[in-house]
Image 1 (tube, rainbow, N blue to C red):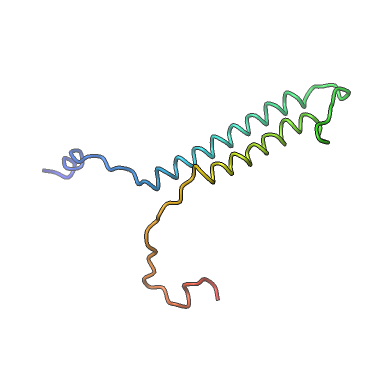
Image 2 (cartoon, helix red, strand yellow):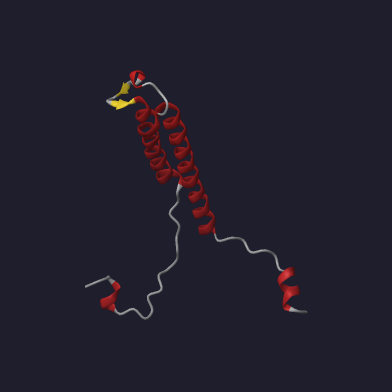
Length: 111
């Protein structure tokens, strides 16, 4: 039997659980960032451009388009980031460190 036959007959390897977890977390962060970006651009463009300056109102000292287009999504992103970091992301065991060949004086970093 040739090597290609053995490779084709063997079952596919399961991906590393650390890879699966980190990919899931990265996708959650990318989705959050993308949604915040799209919201910010759409709201700031809709409320900030082409309007009469006399219609400008203020919310908590900010022009309304800045408050709803920047302050609110950034605040939501802070809350979502805290939630993701506290509940969604998992601390994974990476195994033992390989310290072979490292002298005692090098282990702690720069002297």
